[in-house]
Length: 130
Image (cartoon, rainbow, N blue to C red; front, top):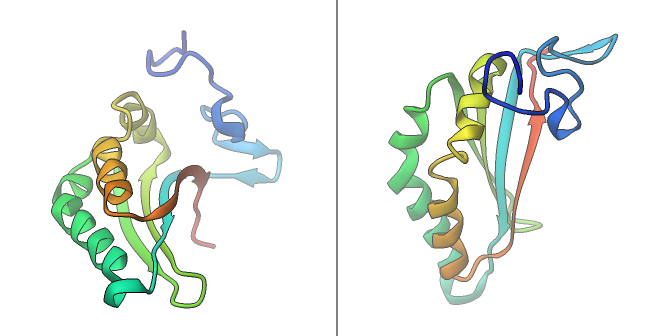
């Protein structure tokens, strides 16, 4: 078990040693982000895009209340019809959110899938301002 009791594998998610905060000698990080993404459709006056935004609005306060959250960003692309939510946390706080299964991720993803959004996926990555 990890020394902080949060994760069993300190090299999770392909991010290198999350305790040293580096992927390689010259790629360090202090923030980890979780992305929820999907595809919306033009049909019915962009009904699925409206539903995705409503699902986010309903959970935004809960997401922002997660310990260590630095920012919450929403990306919408009209060309490729992406809808993305990116939650950026300081690296020290990320493990606790991961242990909590990224709440409210499950509920958010279930709601947008039920609303007809496609290609619902998640991804974890580092996110640094340079």
